[in-house]
Amino acid sequence: MKVIVTGGGGYIGSHTILNILKETTWEVYSIDSHINSTPETFDRIEKISGKRITNYNVDVSDFKALKSCISQIPNVNGIIHFAALKAVGESVEQPLLYYRNNIQGLLNILECCKDLKINNLIFSSSCSIYGNVANLPVDESTPLAKTESPYAATKAMGEAILSDVQKSQKMSITALRYFNPVGAHESGLIGENPINKPNNLFPVITQTAVGKMDKMSVFGVDYNTRDGSCVRDYIHVSDIAKAHILALEKSVERKNFNNVQFYNLGSGNGVSVLEALNTFEKISGLSLNYELDERRVGDVEAIYSNSAKAKKELGWIPKHDLEEMMSSSWKWQQQLEKEKNA
Image (cartoon, rainbow, N blue to C red; front, side):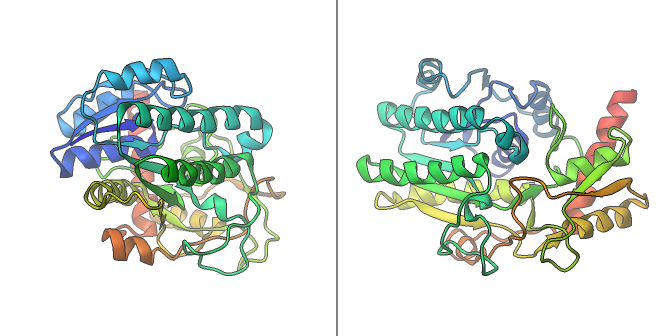
């Protein structure tokens, strides 16, 4: 098979490429303009896998350039579409940026699929589309509540667009609703490395631990949770990566042209922000410098997943626990420090 990964230089995209290289014989290509990644990522992929990935430095929101790029790769079997902006806080501050980038990018990918007869699409969605729900855990039949951020709104809109397009053209589409991808590759040579100030909890923790950030904030300690901080479902990025292979294999095999397939990808365990901090201190032997702060606009109080559908239909079973997630993140941060000081 020939597969294109948009956002292949990003956090989840790079781990998915590594998983494809390790577990399949597929030809894989990347499209990444490095808005939120660096070309060095492909050096890291080569160091781990021994294989050099062709990356096209193209912005998916530029339709003409995108179509020209994809046209250079004949007989593409499927696209795994990651390329999107993803910071909740930033989306609240710059909603137009998020609507323009995330929605236009998806529309362009779908136009290319239609014009170039690419029939399989795996879409990077998010648990944020569920909003604040009354009953936990959430499964794919849980009604979607009001989204709490423009980022979440772009994912909900994306799914609605996919459903409409799927009805009008012959495509097999799968939307994977990630909960909170964390951790790093087992080699310690690749992981989440945001160009700007990190928004996700694990890199905030590890960057604080090495002094790259003076201190970190726990946003909200008065939620209706067991310790007052937000509760999330953390899932190792390598487990998320594996799900994309399974989903694309299923898509090609099933040729499901009747409706979009939706799958939750989570561990099924709710972990609070304070519990995550305590886990890091346990595995590292360090004390974190953090402060308790006001709630952050756009944050959901608590959410965790029922991922039984992905297990039943895709055969997807997460393999990494919270301590493995945290220790791999810490190993990656230490690798970055080692390289910086070399």
